[in-house]
Image (cartoon, rainbow, N blue to C red; front, side):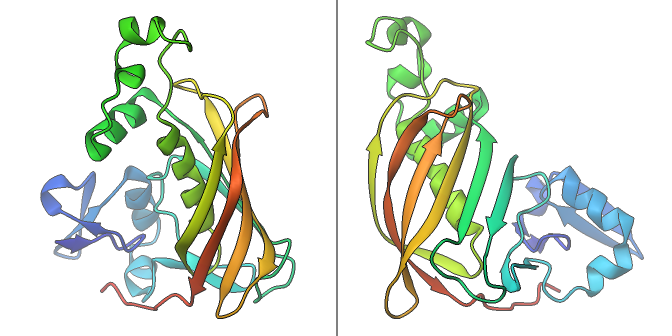
Length: 216
């Protein structure tokens, strides 16, 4: 296995999205965006001991691999270097046909409601819709944007309405209570492209410091 020098993601050379030969060595990349970042400054990228980390809100957090998440992250931290009540992260992404197919393959959830047009047309929804758990997965992506290593402890969700394939959703998480031992309680929600709530709930997470691991 190889390490993408731009973002620190482990890459199977046989499955690499892009490769670049530099100074007699071949580098493997998880996306074209990572390759472009490397090409813009090969020496600086190679010398970065922790390409998987960035600083956000005065704290170390994980870098989203260039172009691979296919979504937009935002982080709002009121006090630099600290997490506290009111701090918030969001993640916005279009949930595509490809996402639905890949999720069905990965999870084994091949419910025809999500995959068979003729079948889905006869259901109460009258169409195919995105897996509810796939939609909820965007909450996990929003949590991953928080500084530190976020570990789920519990989650309570209510599904309010379906999401159409191709719709853009925005997941948001806001800290509402600081608990003991680096634990936090957050409100969670997902809105569709029209701003309607499709999922809301709460989560309890543990946030550890990020380990600084060189990828060279």
